[in-house]
Image (cartoon, rainbow, N blue to C red; front, side, top):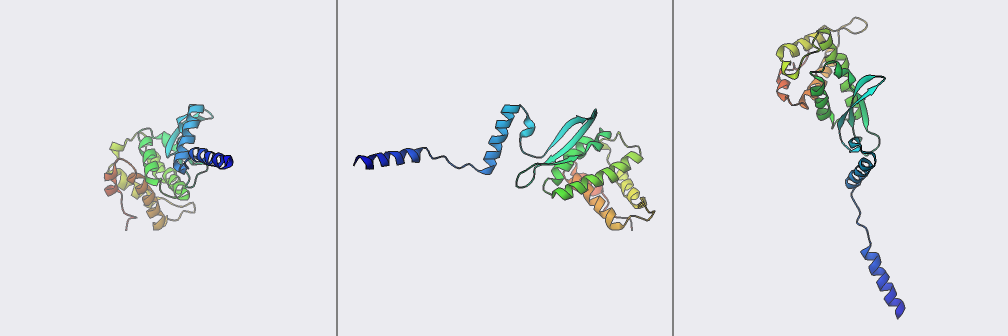
Length: 192
């Protein structure tokens, strides 16, 4: 009978040493904390964030979005915004907040539109020193006019759907900003 007693004792030990299964989210946080303790780097924490750095002596700004299901995060170079020091943080934060639930492909398109459209307009007009407080109906209407007067490489007018897409991308970023009241000033589409 000593065998039965040993079996029960072993079973009790086994039961008491059972580990509780942790959730995936809890495992990610624990791994990030472990890496942070090992490397002293807060960037290891999961989440949407901005990363400032340098590359070839130039200051960089990168928007980082975690991928659904894990893996390497999406990293979008938004360093072009740094040429507009009064607006870079505003638009970078708006991009993070406004597009965090969008697909990776949509975020790439929004960044492309911001670079080649909104910030191109600001640069051409000499608005590099603007701050969010300066964004008003005149500037936003000017952007719509600029879009309507822009030409494709072949000299043809930009299609109205393209203009609406650019305004929509701009709206997405403003929706993610702390100045949502600007949404009312963004034209709804191309001039009729």
